[in-house]
Length: 335
Image 1: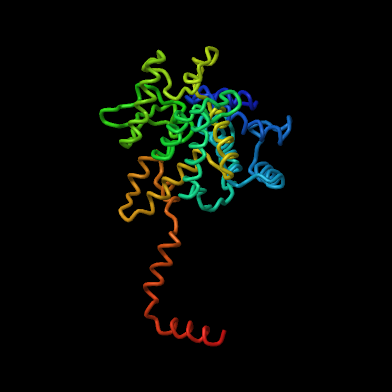
Image 2: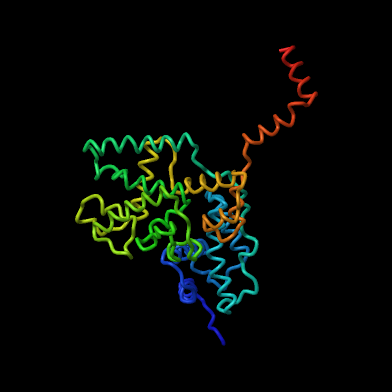
């Protein structure tokens, strides 16, 4: 089959989106990345004119503006996918992708987690707002932490399952299996475009049951979204408006402000994964399944050095070392 050559950026994107079945948000991300490149190159450079040098110059420009390596790599991956598809189907005349070896080295940063002390602060903060709510002083319009029982269910689910933010937004009533104590995740809410199930703990199942029954009492149907905070605020104008990413964002912004440190769904995810990988009987495949990672390489990033355990092992190993003991006694004697 003979394909026509593509000359414009809009046409390249249009054909790519026609070939792929992507979520609206994903299409927007790809279009934005392509627009960044086309704006940098200017109107005279068409897709078939792009060379590796163009991409390297673009990279240098982005680095000078302070772009982080992970952001650059994400942007390049989007545009490179569009180009590779165009090259494979002969829409473009390139023999090799101009994005070859243009990514930046990222390195592995320590995951941002929540300590037990911080988790205790979060719980005490919610206790404080629960007291205000019980006393009839809740400001439902001005504070994103109400109703407290609802948001406590949200926090518990993040803490015990490691869900991504987008996943909780797509859980329907029919996705909760109280008999087998599992949550089914549809392909639409998945970052990796696949379906899977995760277990829910006994106490978590009890909290979800309360939310489920309250939703049914308020006329929610099996295919309705379970996490709809507006159902419980008593406003007729917002009763049918489901939980949005913005609503969840406002909740975490307010909780962060009240606690005095950053709180987010991803920090709960990192905390759970890191703690699971510290356990003596850790199973990396089980953690991979819980977090929904398509690659076990991503799960391995949560294998971190336990400094306290290392210190204990070193102390036990070196406790009988004559050189160490003599060194300590000499320093003590002459200090």
